[in-house]
Image 1 (cartoon, rainbow, N blue to C red):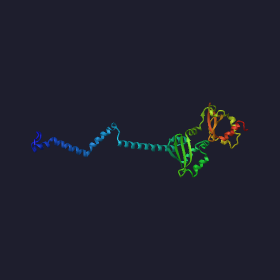
Image 2 (cartoon, rainbow, N blue to C red; image 1 turned 90 degrees about the horizontal axis):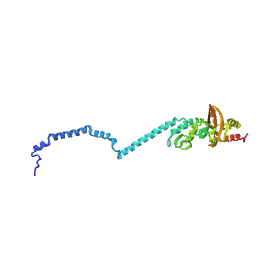
Image 3 (cartoon, rainbow, N blue to C red; image 1 turned 90 degrees about the vertical axis):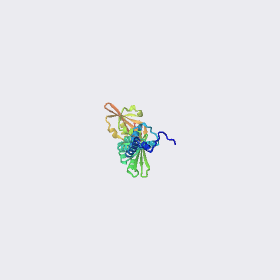
Length: 291
């Protein structure tokens, strides 16, 4: 066998080459490197630090990342829903009017309303306005009888729906409050600047205050409370009544009466509700058909 020129010629020479300072140093460095890695895990830490520092620069792809992202988004959505629900519940519990109740619930949101709380909201309305939502006698039976177990409020696109639920989870009564209805309820106690002749719905049915009240007092005594359901609203106003108008349309058995007040150089109109049949009797007197 031919021997190459760089092969050692003797065992001693082979040993010198094998255990040279370079080889021994390389061996010691390798052993120390491995031992320090097992002892301190510095290689993993170094790689982890590098990956963390370059995390924003690397593309977010892969099945694991997608699963983690979906899980994180699900937790955030659930947390947001729970927080929003608690906020809605707290806002409803603090509501002091039906308008505030509507503002507290978004479409699809629902909370439980205590019967006592609903009663307070209802009693805060003027009698004539409350009757448009539900007859007081019916409400007495719903709230003070043994039918209603709880009340659910559900936010709708156009307002809120109130469900009276019995102990068998059946809806025994429902009240739908629309935004325009609640807005009208909210502002009905306040007069608006202007004159009756500027409101088209009163056209042709505006009477001087003296003529109007003269006709009112010709009605039977038991009919007057039905004609002026909310006289307290009129008593709270300052100034003198110049004229009274009758709305040209009925709504749910009621007709609006407009009272034009004059106070400190300003005209204001206050709207109140009156029973349709009582207004019909009053109109006959105003037209001279009944003396």
